[in-house]
Length: 190
Image (tube, rainbow, N blue to C red; front, side, top):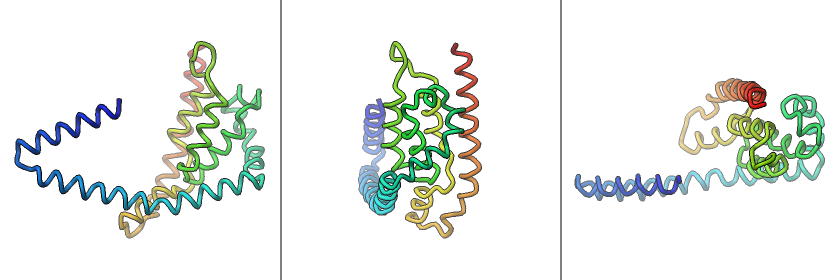
């Protein structure tokens, strides 16, 4: 669906540029935008590699299992069915830990693994724990938004870390609200 919407937007842009005589401007914007996108992607690549490597070392060193044990009292409250079965707790905790450190790119494969473990209930309907995990994944608590800081630094910001306090406050508030709403709606579904 997103591909179709993007295609329609591009088609409308080309048609409008043609009728208004701005084809040269459109071409220049497309080329410079593509160049900037590649530049930003390459500036983020070292940070992604570093943090993905750190997460692998932490996983093999047992740090993530320790973190999982530390988070288990909280996870029991937030994901009661998963905590009872024990299946998916490590994946959830490692994904949340990666998001907590602001490395959402490293959290994505962990979140996918957790989603597979949580699975669906009967008739292909998402269970309460899967819905809660998805909501938290959309608004994860973040202590240091490394990707945002790296993007701001790559864009030439004079103070790329100035957004950190706002990100911390907003991310924790949104996560808390997501959990509360998920639990309220889970109760209403029954």
